[in-house]
Structure formats: structure tokens, C-alpha cells
Image (cartoon, rainbow, N blue to C red; front, side):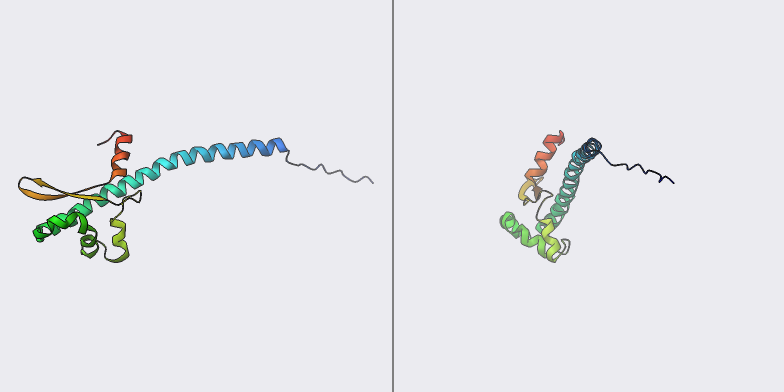
Length: 133
């Protein structure tokens, strides 16, 4: 009796290289698209945090007009102690934009009232890069 010969199938080096190239190409395309999504997420978070900070600080200025002169230095303390800002460690999230940079706080006079404006250099650069303002 003759034994049936089994044919062994093995993966060749060329097949492995082709599969690795395909995986690298797909991963590269996904990573490129994912990076844009990360920047959009940072911008979204920054935009809404700016609005929240302006609300907190404008409310504080309305209730304590004597603090306007020191606001640009004391704004971090005001936010961390505010009931509208998340007290404790979460309030630190309000101090930094989506790129991890500290916000800039200034006061301006509008229609005879002092208004607080919060800005982020990284957010402004992102908007310029995207052609938005």
C-alpha cells in the first residue's frame, strides 16, 4: 500500500511582504484621517471651554466689579472656586485648552461694561490653518 502524499502549503516570503505592505498602507491611511479627527476634537473642546470660562468670569465680574483689575492674574483661582466650574481636580481641565496650553484672559470695555474675553493661541492657529475665524 502506498501512503497518500500530503502536500504541505507554506507561506512564501513574497506573500508575507505583500500582506505587510497592505497592512501598512491601510494603517497609514487610517492614521492620517485620525489625526484630523483629533484636532477637530481639541478645537471642539477648546471652543466650548472658552464659552464656559467667559460665562464664569463675566458672572464673577458682575458680582464683584472690584476684582476686574486683578482678573488676568487671579482668573485660575476664581474658576477653581466657582460653583459653575467643576470644583477640585476637574477644574484644572478648564484652565488648559485642547492642546494643553493655558488660556489667556483679558478684559475689554463694551458699551460701558467690562467684559471678559478668553482666548487660546493654539485654537486661533487651528482656525487660521482651517481658514475659519
